[in-house]
Image (cartoon, rainbow, N blue to C red; front, side, top):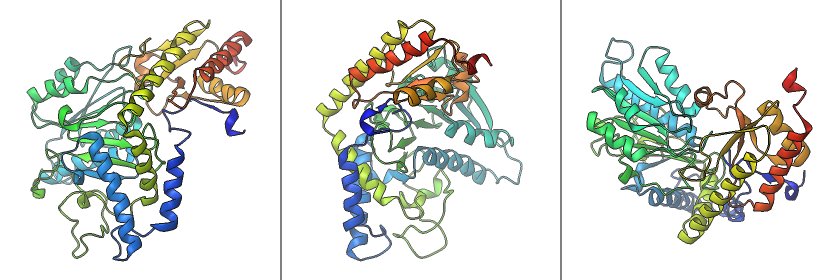
Length: 417
């Protein structure tokens, strides 16, 4: 289907179209700078290093990291989450006698709004009785209340992991309030925030939020290529004296900068960055972030996304048979709307929108099964609509007209089979 006929409303999965500067920067990198960063002294390797470090610096600036070296470049947000959770759990067991000897199980808290990147990674330890896990439910609007988290906190709570915003309902969580109340009970708890759905939409200040680990996706609202991401590692998780690091290096290998010896370097970012990075991807991400660095551009984009989100909500509310989930306004949410149409399985409805109207949405459980259980949409989930500033009001109206047409057509045969 020609690109001009597509209405793309699946930016919660990945942004599209990418800014033209992204592709241009990647082609320029491949043509003129495609050495292996840190793996050679020649000019191509040095120029690759310059690109990668510029991307690191831009990310550090975006989240107000105290030092760019605390931004570890990864292959995406899932990679970042795994690096954080595996690293923290492994470090705890290393410091308490290892997996092969009995030791107190660390206590970890998470929530039902989480993506499977968090849930499955924690489950692999909870199912083997290597951690004690408490999962805090959200309310019907997808909000996690601070009191619910602190009620589960214990003096031995090791980590708290939460998504900054639900990828299903778009609800932005009160992270600052939750962390402040949690630290009154457990001052040294390590806080992991999954920013996959918020970075690029909202300003994020890791120092103001007082968080220790922030997982970043480069390909969503930042509008960079897939396969790019980062993990911010704060001083509480990785102090200046590396022997006291509370995050263990799971991935080992060459770092380029520190070659001799069989031990990984004990300084960031090298301590957690093994192997050749996706340098061409970070060239594209750097170009995307530079376009977003203009405050006025960011303000207009945010305003556009809010207006389009409200237009979707208001339009869907007028269609008979539609059920909306989460907040019914555009406040304290990212541009994500979840709905169902009576008689239509979510995946089939999304499929018809694509096949018949050229409208890209996402039907199903969106890799976040527990939030669907909490709001009553399990097991089939719902249809997620996630616009961006690249969309127009006319495109939203075409989407609403398509849903209205399918509603008038009546329940699908699959829905009654």
